[in-house]
Length: 322
Image (tube, rainbow, N blue to C red):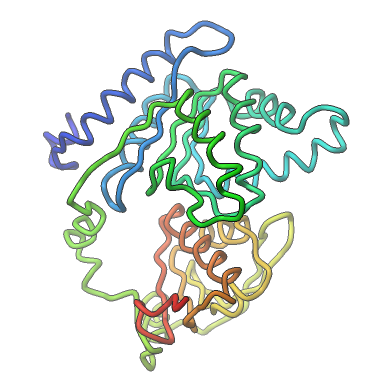
């Protein structure tokens, strides 16, 4: 209410409804005893820019201040952490079910509250893992708050063996989390950009507008000379890019056609505040790996609040032709 009164946020009955539910969870977590929690989590779904991440971040800011041991992560980042833990379980705890090993590690190392932004299922591996993993987490007393653009029943749409693996997860999710839609006709992110004045300088160009990337490089660096820089990426590897003063100039070929992990993208986007990406092609069904990497790249830049300047080879609406 104070943020609305101060003009920082706009008043929204829908967001207030979600905040009331999050407030109940907050008080439940502060008052709960040791052991498995009776506090249910929350799954918030709605359209882009409706305020899902914002209300969860407000909740996390309050809760982390008082509870301490909790974590807020992008869902892709979380799943890559989980896959590493599952791999480690084979050597560290032979004979123990990997999901149980991972759940115990999360409680010990992270805490009993996890907030996930942009919940999505994109691979059969993740879909198979989610039910045993989340059941083990919920049994261990971990409370989960999630945001997603999709309702639970619409996750992994068109995915391989979806009818086998998704229904058990959705049933467990509904048993352990309240599912709430956040309905809004307003895209608050678009309004924020319009008010900020950032929209004056377009960050997308279509059909490789000549000189667009170079203009942005000059604008962001003051016309500095391009130089090669090395940074630590995922799994301890080091990658080389063209950069200067927090600005990087790279290409779709380098970032999405090469084998890159989500950790690589998060490392890049946390190091550079402006990323100029050239040569984004039209993708068809044969380019599904590249499309997935590009999606992960966009998610990482959004999560890190990095400015992504994107140069497309064709009109943006034709970016995915099949």
